[in-house]
Amino acid sequence: MSEEITNANFIHDFIDEDIAPGGDYAGMTVHTRFPPEPNGYLHIGHAKAICIDFGTAEKYGGICNLRMDDTNPTKEDVEYVDAIMEDIRWLGFDWGDRFFFASQYFEKMYECAVELIEKGLAYVCELTPEQMREFRGDLTTPAKSPFRDRPKEESLDLFRRMRAGEFEDGKMTLRARIDLTSGNFNMRDPVIYRINRITHHRTGNEWCIYPMYDFAHPIEDAIEGITHSLCTLEFEAHRPLYDWVRDNVTLPAKPRQIEFSRLGITNTVMSKRKLRKLVEDGIVDGWDDPRMPTLCGLRRRGYTPLSIRNFCERIGVSKTNSTVDYAFLEHCLREDLNESAQRTMVVLDPVKLVITNYPEGKSETFEIENNPNRPEDGKRTITFSRECWIEKTDYMDEPVKGYFRMFPGNEVRLKTAYIVKCTGCKRDENGELIEVYAEYDPETRGGDTPDGRRIKGTIHWVDAENSVDAEVRMYENLFTDPEPDTGDKDFLEYINPDSLKILTDCKAEKGLTQSAQTHFQFMRIGYFCIDKKASESSGRLVFNKSVSLKDGFKKKK
Ligand code: ATP
Ligand code: MG
Image (cartoon, rainbow, N blue to C red; front, side, top):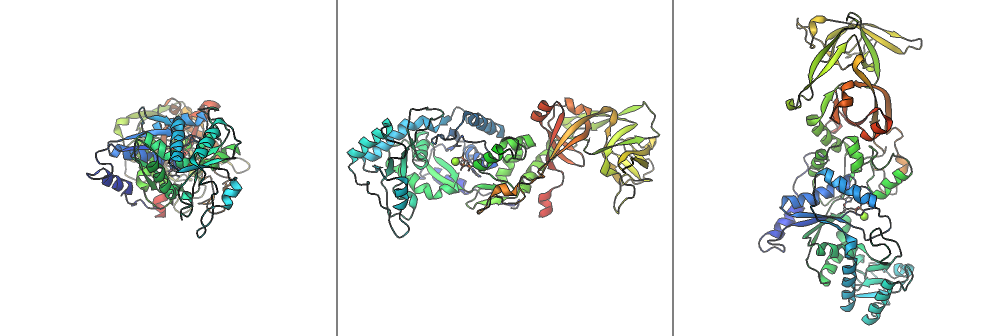
C-alpha cells in the first residue's frame, strides 16, 4: 500500500455519466444511503463505506440517508443503533432527518411479493432446505423446482397463510421465478421470504415471515428514492437480482447499485462476528478496547475523526479487495496529531535526578509553547527545582557508542531548562538504579550555552515537586499474523499476548490533570490520549498510547 494511491474514484465517474444530460439520472439529486445492520459496533471498514456514501452525496450536493438494515431479526439490539449514530456523528457526517429502519417497509415489501406472485414471477415452494440444496444443480445441470408452476392463486393463498402463521418455521418459502438455468446461482429462483418466528426489536411478533436481503434491499432503496446504492464487492454477483426486483415490482425509483472493494487492515480482523467473539471471550475489554478496529475503540485509542477521514480518502476506492498496512492508518493519525496535539513531558520509567548544586527549597518557572505548530495554542508555565524525574534509559554508567545522554562526566540538556553535568548515581544492593546525580550550570537557563559549546544530548524531565503519578497503557497489534483470518486460519490462534502493557509508575506534569486537552505528544516518545473512561473508574490519570513518534510507514518504504 503506498501513499501515491490514485485518488481517481470510479464511482464518481459512473455518477458523472448518470447525471449528465441524457444520463439515466439526468437532473436528479444524487441520493445515497448508509445501511448498517445493527448487530454490532461500527469498525474502520464501515468508516470507509460511510466516507464513500456520505462523501459522495456531499461531493454532488446530494443527500445521504442513514438506514438501519434490520430485516434479519436475530441479533439486533438498540444498544447498537445508538452507538452507530454516535460514531457516524463523531466522524462528522449528518443524515439530517433521514433516519430509517428497513423494518418500516415490511408491509410494502409484502405487497411487492404479492405483486410478483400475481405476475407469475414468484411462487410458494415446499422443498425442505436439504432438498433445495440437492436440487440446486451445478454449472452444467439446471436447478429443479417442482413447485414453480403451481397456479398463482394457490401461491397467493399459501403466502397469505404463511404470513398468518399457519405453517411451521422452514416449512415453506416464497421464491422468485427467474431462471433455473442461470450461470449465476443467485438467479436460480432465489428464496425471497422465509418463515422465522423470532421477535423483532421493533416490530415485535407482528411478523413471522421475513424478507431476504436481496429482495428487501432494492425495495428499501427505491422507497427512499436512492439514486446510487453503494455497497461492497461481495454484492456484485447479486446485482442482477437487485435489478430484477427493482424492474419487476412497482416502485417509485430505480436505484443503481455500484460495488467497491472491502477494506481490510493488517494484523486485525474486521468482521463483526469475529470482533464480538473477542469481546465475549474476554480477549479484549469490550467493543471500545483501544486495540479494537472499531470506531469506538479507535476513538479511545486517540484516533481523531480527521485522521480516519484522511485515511479513507487516501486509500481510495477500487474494485480489488486489498489489505492496507496498519502502519498507514497510524501514519494518518501521526500526521494529524503532529499538527494538533499539545506537547508535554512525561517520564514512563522514572528515576530521580538530583541536581546537587541547586539550592534546596528553590523553584523557578519556564514558559513553554503548547504546540510549536500552533502558536495560537499559547504557552504554559512549568516548574523546575532540585529534583526531577528522568527516564532510567537516559542514564548509563558506561556509554555505548553514540550514547549522548547521562553518564558520569557528560553534559546533557534538560529540555528548555538547563545544561547539567552528570556526576554519578546510586544503586541498591541488586544494582537497581536509585538516583542519578548532576550539577547544573546556572549560566545556561533556557538550555543555551553562553560560550557556544556543543551539547549533543537533550532529555525530557518532570519536576518532582509538581509531578503526578500516571498510568500509561502501551499497545501493540492485537494479532501476530498480518492476515489472521485469511484462508482456513483460526484467528484466535494468532492473538498477540503482548498487545497490552501497563506502566503504572509514570510521572506527568501535574497541570495535565486540569488540562482541557485530551491528545498529547509526550516529547521524544509518542502520541498519547487521556483514557477518560479508565481515568474516571480508577481515579488516576490514565493514558493510552495512540501511536509512536517514528513513522514505521515511511521507514518501510
Ligand atoms: P461485517 O462482516 O463486519 O459484519 P457487514 O457488511 O455485514 O460487515 P453491515 O452492517 O451490513 O456489515 O455493513 C454496512 C455497510 O458497510 C455495507 O454497505 C457494507 O458493504 C459496508 N462495509 C462493511 N464492512 C466493510 C469493509 N470492511 N469495508 C468497506 N465497507 C464495509
Ligand atoms: Mg451484514
